[in-house]
Amino acid sequence: MIFQKLYDQLPQAVFFSVKGANRLRQTAVALGRSGIDWVIEGRPAPPVLMRKTFERLGATYIKIGQLIASSPSLFPEEYVKAFHQCLDQTEPVPFNQMHKILKAELGRDYLGTVFSDIDPNPIASASIAQVYAATLGTGEKVVIKIQRPGVKTILTTDLNFLYYSAAVLERLVPRLQHISLAGILSEIRRTVFEECDFIKEAENIGIFAEFLQKSGNTKVVTPKVFSHASTRRVLTMERLYGIPLTDREQFLKSTDQPQVVLGAAFETWLASVAGCELFHADLHAGNLMILGDGRVGFIDFGIVGRISEKTKNGVMALIQAMIVKDYMTIAESMLVIGMTRKKVDTAMLAKDLEDFYHASESYAIEGLQVYPPALEEPEQILLDMVRIAEAHGIRFPREFTLLLKQFLYFDSYSDILFDMDMMLDDMMLDVDFFNRRLQFPEE
Image 1 (tube, rainbow, N blue to C red):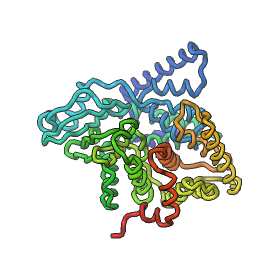
Image 2 (image 1 turned 30 degrees about the vertical axis):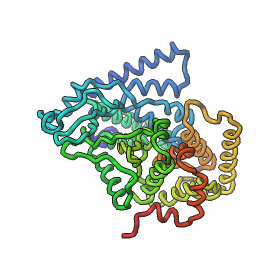
Image 3 (image 1 turned 120 degrees about the vertical axis):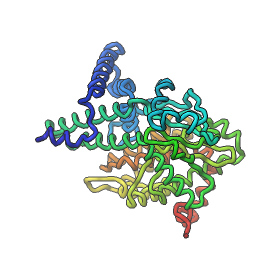
Image 4 (image 1 turned 90 degrees about the horizontal axis):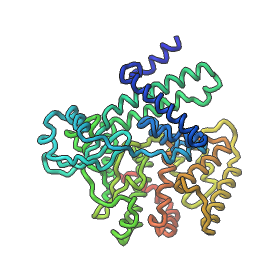
């Protein structure tokens, strides 16, 4: 029976419980308010209204909005642009509520045994968790990432309801099956639940730390995880002190070799794509910390990517080709990475990519505004490249768009990252560069 089969696919379903019913009521109220806004605000564009509604609905929908923003190969461009403004910062929950989480996870006497003190004012407050400064009972300065109360119930209720609705809709309207809404929502559910599992995040940090150790990399660090003070809802990590890359001015004042510091971060990230089982998929400026001794801290491993060996080879070829603007190799790499149902004219794709790059450079030279103010340059370049590929019948997997977006974030710091022209010339003249830098050293 169709409904029994669908229900069996929802092992974590709770939307028929009292809490689930309350969440559905909250959803209905939020949708009603959005309807009123649509009338009062003069019927704003659907993508804008949808983004505001998602922000109002909270954690689950914010995460879905962020996925839309990072998946231009799956969603229309106007929605991708609108959801780039989908904020993950939320009003903090009072510490007395977070205290209950800590007590349930670490024991009633966690303060005095596990921790000697905790600052009740959060360092950061996002849709899934809040972060606090603390000191362990053994004296180490740490940060505690604590899951917001009730967030797992909200996520489970929302995502299962959406998945169930999409599955039923696809059965009732067969022509919608090619969109694969249920499949997309299933992937979103997996990704978001992973982000809620701090044990998994601790494992991600451990995998990356082991990769750094095996490759002899001492220029980049990850925070040490304190397992005795960590659970599925609480993650306690070493506190790294430094300058976040968001403070570009302070960073430039702190060192006379900024390109060396950022170059180490870029090379490390590239090496992880080639030689580690995962790569950091959210390494924007806020997750890069420049430490006092010149090392770079990679923080927040809640979102990571994994790619197949075939995609990995295509990606490395693509990145090299993008650096030296070898448009034919860029086009050929896109074919390796993406999916297509028709024969692609590689020469024509390469010509379109070359025209796009030349147009962008011309606008930049003339000092004209190329990108909409709502978007950062890397995101707009990503959108444009995906749009060109799609025009030739190529669709990219989400893991690749995450990876490409990450590379473009680094590229946006090229004014700092390199005496880049010289460094890249050296890199590309040395045919063994990627073999040396992107693989583990021989044992």
